[in-house]
Amino acid sequence: MSGPAVDLTFPHNWTAEILRARPLIVPRKQFVYPRQAEEVERGALEAMVRPANAEPFLATFALGFADPAAPTGIWSAPNPAWMCGVAGGYAYLVNTAEPEQFEQIEYRPVLEVRALAEQQLLLFTGHHSLLAWGANGKAWQTARLSWEGVQITEIAGDELRGLGWDLRTDRDVHFSVDLRTGAHVLETEFNN
Image (cartoon, rainbow, N blue to C red):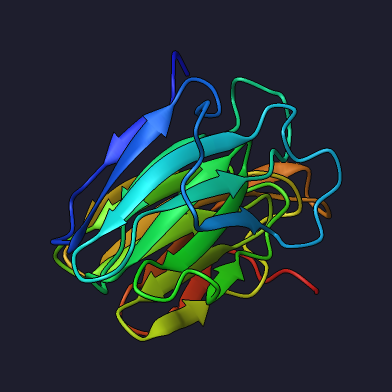
């Protein structure tokens, strides 16, 4: 990835500017995600966030991995008050109206973030499964789709298709996921 991504697919009531460096004069409100991060400045994604009806704040998203393959950037979310900041594959969803309210996506790392406008979902791909975030928070999470590496091959309507690696057969197997529910069908079922 050449630089931080900015995906504003969903309507939102905030603006965010990704900063190259911490500003010399920092705003009164500053938030670090997660709160208990160690050495947060090294490689962190910093953004000046300006909510529609609240005070601007500096958001510092702690770096997960310093690997260019791990996503970094800002995404709008299905709820217009929320934003998603990702730094080296660590993803944080923040309520811009109340920035102390946030969720960290459990995947360490998130390998891909996709905005699915038709389904009103922000989709996170991990090594083993998928997680979807909707307007009211976490919408669903699949069970294990792969032992190592989930590849999305197609999204058609409310069906996502992909490939996952099966440890027992040492081959890729096809899967499909219902984007409304997260229910999935595998060519071969995995054990959790």
